Length: 339
Image (tube, rainbow, N blue to C red):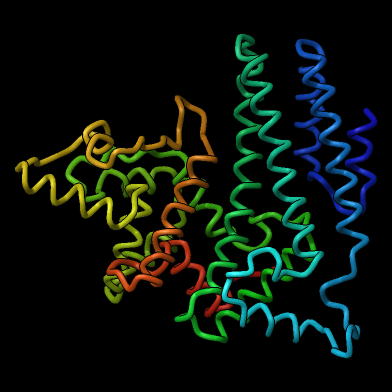
């Protein structure tokens, strides 16, 4: 009970009310069947609580002060972030920003630990199946929040993103870092809906037209605004290409390779197994039976993001951004994000 009390008393809430109840319930179950793993998870929870105190005790990013003869303010921070090319990584971020990001990643690792322990120790208990499903949902939401943060950072280092758009992205990032307890549904529910739906489908590939995958997204209640954005008449070629990457969970180059091979072999449709042989890599599944794997979605985003960055540096054809980035720019420019 001490760990659960620490969750409630911390200035920076580790979990919301529903999450806290779920964590307490999971730890209670694990203490019955795997006390050693339960103790290890409680230790992680205590460390997470200590980290939250460090975040809240750090100087506010909105505060104005003077250091080394220079005035530091929100305005100077926004300007600095907008001029950042991304090559300095975490070293270019304020201390509170780095600690806030560390807090979120630590929370994700803790939730992953809960999922692993529950899956291993409680799989035989029919009553605990729903427990694992709920834990995966909470883990997914934290990962979606981390993805949104990475998405905004990626926009800041893009040379062809407008300065006003970058400033809005920077302001949103500062809000996330200042309030480390907020989650994606607090500031970008549209992307949460999109990732929530994508995490529940697997691409069959087939004829590589994407019709089946598109219908499945609709059936999983993917954001209508997201789907509509890529279905509008004025959508650009690169936006279409980025949407195909999102649908098939592949890079533009991989899709082109498969289409060329299909044409050469006069194949009307392909299987996932055939694609794996051609691409020389395994194709991860977002869903396992009736459970989701949010790590697969996370890896999918970063594969597509790295490919987009490479095209800019190498001057290669293909989308310069992920589908989510094109959507985020639209949201930022139309002031549809919060908090």
